[in-house]
Amino acid sequence: MTNIVSPAFVETARLCADAAASRVVRHFRIGLASDAKADDSPVTAADREAEQAMRAVIASRHPDHAILGEEFGGAHASGPWCWVIDPIDGTRAFITGRPSFTTLVALFHNDVPVLGVVDQPVTGERWVGVTGHKTLFESRSLPGTIGTRRCVALAAAELSCTSPDIFVPPFGEKFNMLRGLVRRTSWGGDAYAYGLLALGQIDIVAECTMKPWDWGALVPVVQGAGGRVTDWSGGALTLESAGDVLACGDAVLHAAVVRELSHAPSFR
Image (cartoon, rainbow, N blue to C red; front, side):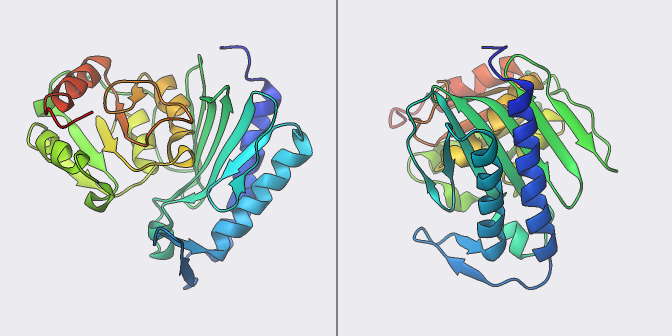
């Protein structure tokens, strides 16, 4: 598994992030109009332009690979490789001028993510994760060192989630229980919060109703920083997962969170 991600694949992921950035940045903070998708989430011209640019990069370099994207769906391929992309993760942040959105590029092998890039084009921050290797963090100006922090006690943990609105039963009730056990809870950030977890700034991120393009890139990034990413029951994430995602910087803390989340009889 550690050797199947070739340097060419990593270069493709980087080129996708670059291509998306060139489209996204020119639309940032210009009052860009947004449309509502079927699930009432917003989408902009920047989302569509960026995904098309990313798809063009992949198609030119790996025409035999499948592509699954948030805005334009995906086609099945006969091989094991599938690129899963999200041009703007955090469109609400993007359209309100907050630089906490990211571009996400993931490569799955047999339904499991093995390569991930998390890119914030405005701040110039980029996380590159490859299964079996230490995650890289690159930044034009902001400080940061890759490595999750040791935190074994729930009472000392920093918990994060994008929004309370994402929860459906029984996840909302379980999250509120978890909130009562940790030191502090912060809201917002989307995928950017997982990058901060990889930098040792956050200890837990717990979310649900996520799609593969929301979490695919995050798994190699967090794991390569020393953390764990699973579903809320501690199971591995694949393209068939239900969409509940739990990331922890410390393996001991992760086990404690899974244990607490499993207590309610309504869960799973």
